[in-house]
Length: 349
Image (cartoon, helix red, strand yellow):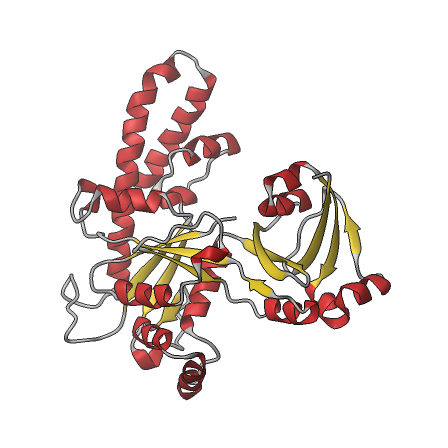
């Protein structure tokens, strides 16, 4: 499934530097169907060492990882909901993403002024959230006004939505985000259609000083956008040496990508053979037919069964060896896919 993450933040928090690091690690567009790269979009690989192990066993010609799309959303300033900065463009860009990364500044640099005159990530975050809440309130109030008459006529669907809107309005007025407001399943379905900004899953990211990247905050992740940008400029070997010098196991960007990937409760299953080894993204709790549908929509409709091997068994014994040892399972339509499954689908297609 597509994963689209919007990066937002106040001016001068390092958003452009971080995004430059992301776009320099951008994957080749031709590997992914119907992908159009715009200047403010970067498509990057989701790091997963299991891919290479599976590809080695299968002697795969090609390795295709899961991907995440990052969108550089510019223009957030105080009163953005009133049209300040890029205003409506900023808000419409957020509506198009699956989740939001809030980038906040903790690094010190006398040459880079802070828009509010001092470094205070808590305040930065509150400014961002306030703008999103105010924008959502405006959307909700307009919808309430448009729906009120129809709800009074007794239309059941309108009444459900009207009640849901009143709950959301009350929650927003008290500073709650939409996703934290308790709604019934029917009410939630109605509210989802509005694509409210505070309904998006969010990840806090702190842009730290260069040598403090290892300090992990309790409510998010720490990353040095400056170092990530420098790493992105290096060859693989030079980057490895630089990481060793820093005492890091991997770039912070990898942690960011994986955190964003898991933010939406996504898991990975694999297909592996001589032609290619590929990672596929599905939501946690997806069934085998739904997983097959990620490859082609017809596969979900015409699903018969799936051959399933854990990635560890596949690596340890190979496909044929796993089958001979009884480590391959035949699963039907009700099977819930697990992270790391290697799957082969049988369909009527």
